[in-house]
Length: 333
Length: 173
Image 1 (cartoon, rainbow over the protein chains, first blue to last red):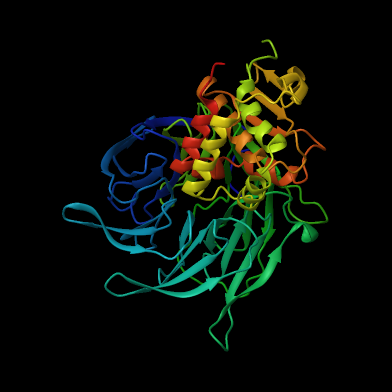
Image 2: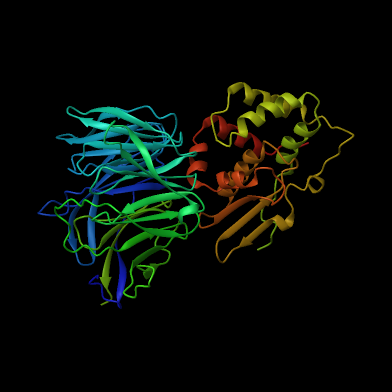
C-alpha cells in the first residue's frame, strides 16, 4: 500500500519555464541527474523544431530554479515530437516529423547530434530505449515500428521493421525490466512485440483491442510502474486503462524505495489528474481513484506529464501554450 | 454568443463544390482527388494536382445557369451547425459535404479548423464533424480532423497550407 495521506494534498506550482515559441510536445527528465549532487536536467521538444535542455540551479520548498542550459535549433527541420534520455543519461534521442530520429550527446561544448536514424517514410512519433540501453525503438505514421541495435561509436543498426499496426503508431515503450516492446496506435490497439527465442525474429505476440478490453479510439500513450507489473494506457476514448503485466522474471536491482505508484495524466481539458490505487479492492481486482485534479494547470492542452525519477513527487508538464511547468505534490500547509 | 460565429465564407464551399458537381470532365478530377484524398492521409499532394485545382479556381466563376447554388441551397454550413459554449470555451462545427463521397471533405474540414484557429482565442477547444449520415466514411474523416497531431503534421506540408490559404482567401464577385 502507498504511504500517501488521504487528505490534504495539493499540486504546488514551483516554476513555469518559458522559451518555446510553439507548443511543447514532449519532456524527459535525465535519469541520472537530480541526485547525489547533480542538478536535475530536463529535456523538452516541440513545434518550434527545437530541443531545449533545462538545468536546475537550486531547489527550495516553494520554488525551483531551472534555467535554459541550451537551445538546439539545427537538429530537425520539422516539429520535434518526443525526446527521451538513454538509461545512462549520456544520450538523448529525439523523434521528429521530418522522418528522422536524432541521437544527441553532451560534450565539452554542449549538445551535438552524433547520429541520425533514417528509414521511416514519414513523421516519427516516438522513440524509446530499452532498460539496458542496448536497443532503441521508433514508430511512425508509416504504421511501422523499427528496432535498432545500439553499437559502439554511435552506430545504430536496424534489426527489425515491425509491421502489424494498420494505422499511425503513436508511441513505443520498452518494458522496464525485460526486452519486450509495446506500441499503441491510431488503429485503437496496443501491440506487444518480443523476440522469438529460436530465430531472433521480432514478432507481435499479443494485440490488445476492443475485443479484449482494449480502447475504442486512438491510444496515445503507454507507461509502466517501476517493476513493470502494471501498465497504464490512455486514449482518445477518454479512458485511462490499467493493465496487469504477466512478466515472470523480474530483474532485481535498484527500485526507488519511495516509489508510490501515482499515475499522473494531462489532457485536452487543460487539467492534471493524479490517480492512485484504492484501498478497497473489489473481487475483480484493484481499483483506482482520483487523488486530485488540478484544473487549468495550463492555458491550453497538456501534451506530456513526467515524474522526476530521482526527486520525490516532482512533476513536469508540457503544453500547447508553449510552457513547461514544474510541480511539487505536497501537503496543504 | 450568437451561433453564427462563423461567417462561413460561402465562396470556399461553392468554389470546391460546384466544379466537382457540375463540370463535365470533372470525372478525372474526382477520380484523382478520390484516389489521393480518400487514402485518408494528409500526404503530400502533387504539384500538378494543385495546379489543376488552381485552374478550376479560374473557371469556377463562370456561372452555370442550370445550377444556381447558394450556401443555403448547398447547405454545407447552416446556423444550427455551429455550437458555441463560451463559458466552457467550446465550439463544435458540423458541416455537410454536398456529395456523399465528397473527396474534399477532409480539406474542407481542415480549412474550417485553420479558419477557427486563426479567428478564435486560444482558450477554445474545437471539434469539427461531418454531419451524421452525409458522408460514406464520416467516422474516418472525423477521426482525422480531430487528431491534433495529424492536423499539426498536415499543416507543416507547404502544399497543403497553400491550398488551405487559397481556400480561405476571400474573393469578390
